[in-house]
Amino acid sequence: MSPDPLRAARLSRRTVLAGTAGAVGALALPGVAGAAPVDWSRAVVDSTMKRHTPATLGGWGYTRGLYLYGQYLVYKRTGEKSYLDFILAWYDRFVTESGISNNFTNLDAMRSGQMFPLLYTETGQAKYKTAADQLRARFPSYPRTSDGGMFHATSRVGQLWADGVYMAQPFLALYGKTFGDAAYCYEEAAKNVSVYFDRLKEPAKGLLYHAYDEDGSEPWASGPGRHSKFHWGRAIGWLGMTAIDLLEILPRDHPRRRRLVDVVKFLAAGYARWQDRASGRWFQVVDRGGDKDNWLETSASAMYTFLLSRAVERGYVGPEYRPVAAKGYRGVLSQVSTGPDGTTDISNISEGTNVGDTAYYYARKRNTNDFHGLGAFLIMNEQLAR
Image (cartoon, rainbow, N blue to C red; front, side, top):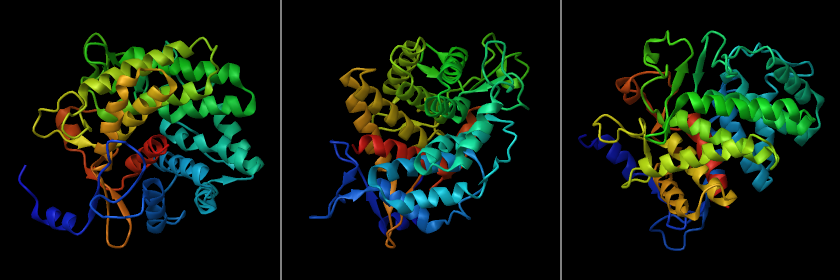
């Protein structure tokens, strides 16, 4: 790829941020003697709140829910009330005393509901429990495959997409913990991770395929496994973060806990195998780094780094994975820059993506400050900065 002189000029006017071997979150600006440490989570949240009000952040959708969950983690660490106020103002556009008006016909629509139990716990306001109850009530009738996997959407009959588990199952597990509904919620959430994993895993590579179609009628689902053919980075990251989140909630004696740990071990090994040695990041199509049109993608790299670091911390994998996480962290931080106005940018984030072939994945827009990447960055940084 030939150099882009306009991009080079822009970068010359910005300070590009890079991590250090210690992989910590509050880093001094490189090359600036005596520069004060920077909290990159705060920098991202402050920049996003400068660019958007709750009214202009966007409509109900999983990307905003992902980002605001990341901002909530920063609030919990810092106690910065304005961060919580911003989150509440966005949710109060959709949640009233009657709860939320949403039919939840797809898993994506459920992701933002992850915050309902958390906001109820923070505020004690009954409307957040009402909304949580409404979402919880959707699960028994939500359509499933013959082995119990929730359809990615009611309109996508028999289809399981790896990203779908993150949209629904962390909410379900947290609801069970918060409101005393553990028997159903823990079992259903953990079972779905197992069903998705079994349908999508590729043991020879330690990776997951993007999607599965139960009857094999989709053109991308031909073959005995009835799954798609490629290993798209962010889809694999979504499922890994789900397993980690559920392990934070399920009790140690839960019968499905061991399987979730096995999922984490499988993915950690795959992440280590396919990490780009030069950059520390991972490719858009993870196992095809040699393809000239493939590119290193930031949101998946943040998700993988988060899983690796948390898995080492919790003892799910050995300490040999710690340097892999540190290298991933440095790689993600290399995509962060700050400009003269003090706002922070994160680059090379894939836009929203359906199931496709390599040409389709490679041609996805490489966005800056896409909420997929901002949310994943905050989740990662809150883990690595500790």
